[in-house]
Length: 400
Ligand code: FEO
Image (cartoon, rainbow, N blue to C red; front, side, top):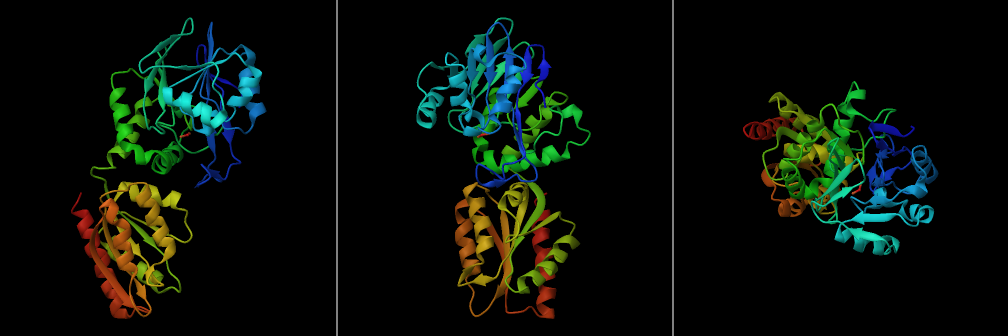
């Protein structure tokens, strides 16, 4: 896509990435892609807000060159140091050696450690303004959204918030950059949730703090560095982020995430009976085979739903490893305060339940019930499984 004018003097100059398989080397985006949005303010003094990962470097600088010679750029504003937004920085410095790099005090430290850049770096303070001529930028410190050095940049005349990771999503842009250019926003909203839970959710308290801090700043456009620019309904994405951040400690949605794994089909067979019981109560249910689904896609359900049903056999005296790995990541991401129940098959002794309790203890999941059976389930076991699922669904429903 060419450079796109967002407002007079303000341009999107981002890069679409449909070739990276794992974001942060961890989260799958093979099908969805991602964008690294950067913004050029072409004023008497010229500024770029955020950059790009070091891929398609020629394309990135060509895009800027459509508007202004790269060597004429006066300022690069680093809202966030993570290399998906700064990877082309050293190349930029070679093209434009006099460019001043602006960021927080911690950004200055990180520029030295990540890139060996120490010259012509200027620390900006929380609330500081920078006049470019006709346009003025203001910087707000928003630590831990996503790293400790993070800030956001506000363009005062058009009321644009360049928010970097905040309010971003996975999903490469599909030929248009604004929310009002997409008839169906479901894809980006779903990918915004997956991005939030994968990348930002552990820092939900700082997210709420940042939203609170910016509550009195008039916003006409939210321009994140991943995904869509929100100009038709800028507060829609802010409200979603606020809701998701509040899920970290508050009430979540009535619903159950069923995570299961099965070695020879016995726990799988019981899973269907448990699911039947849950569905008979009318509680929303999402089912994930832990061995075949990347945890990136399971975390959004775990984050938003009140209940977790774990189906896993005992494996070598412990919890079936693919299920344990999903739960380990949920603990790492601080998925707190769920109600949990467990079912599954065992061969000669149990052990899965004991390990499950140990894994989720740090995140305060409340074990409500368990149902384990030896070998293959009998008809009586299936009946019990249905009742077990229905009873757990009633517990979750009662939370609504
Ligand atoms: Fe998009 Fe935290 O980097």
